[in-house]
Image (tube, rainbow, N blue to C red; front, side, top):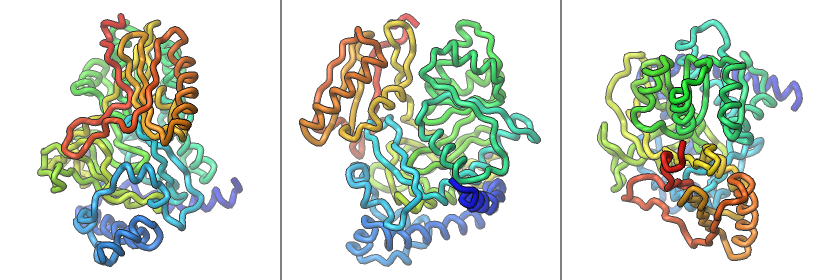
Length: 448
Ligand SMILES: [Zn+2]
């Protein structure tokens, strides 16, 4: 990447640096910006994205008639299966310099979403909104050290690489990464060596880590902020970690479908929605909007990605909106909770605990696999169900999966691999999210 490209990227970032103020804008101003973006993306979609071009033709609607979020929500709901199976129909014909990302394995349905270059660069600036919160908690005026405990090749690290190659960051963050697959002693050693102000990791891993620190009374350089992403913490655990360790526990709701969806502020009253970047609607099963406080399905429209265009996309997560005004003074609406993203950890015969993303990592780049479900039925016994396009693809995929899983789980395991025509997709009207990685082994039975 040349310096010219980096400078162009930096200009994009500079333009967006005022972003930090946006959540504090008046409702009027936020809604005006949001609706302007609705109009822009709908016009773009109707012109350049095959699915929407056909849709507007079929229903005889002019894209210019979609002017507000309320109008946008009248468009039909996308079909997740169609988006997965025919990704090019949702990809803009004008898209280039894109960053492909594979969705999280928690749905068992790997799907590719492409992001255009300017939306990725702008995303750094949007991050200022969330950074403001962290700086407020760790003390402003210096660059906090952040330790990311995750996976190599994760979407998070790919975005970092992309932005480093494409932009000179105004403030280069101090950040290190350690793989979640390392033994927990090594992860704790990494924390003690780096002494991060912010520890970022997945919800279930954070839960496990802090349980262990407490149970074994491990000496650890506690961060000021624990940031969990990717999945929720079990109910009550956020508060328990805050009380037991005296650290602020925050979360961000982000996904491959939209990088910035919602975030916790200092007050931790819920998730403030980046309303001008995406529309989040909470829907009842009959398609109507849920009332405030009522749990429903999260339906998302990404208003800033002009590559893979997703409008009215069911995320497979459940949530509920809150009417409370947050004492922090931000005027972005609040989601009081997001459910259905708790994932099971796998406890191995030797006592090591494996995060489901380690299983996902084994499959996500295997294009023969359309869908999978992995179940631990007993300490050493595992079942893998695979959906593939045909028997030849199944033969290839199952061979590869078996090899990778034995390398990860140990060679003495009992592993059974079956072909399935379709896995229990969550149908409309059914509650609870499909789990791609499940364990039926209780932690006490596993002796940890
Ligand atoms: Zn707030």
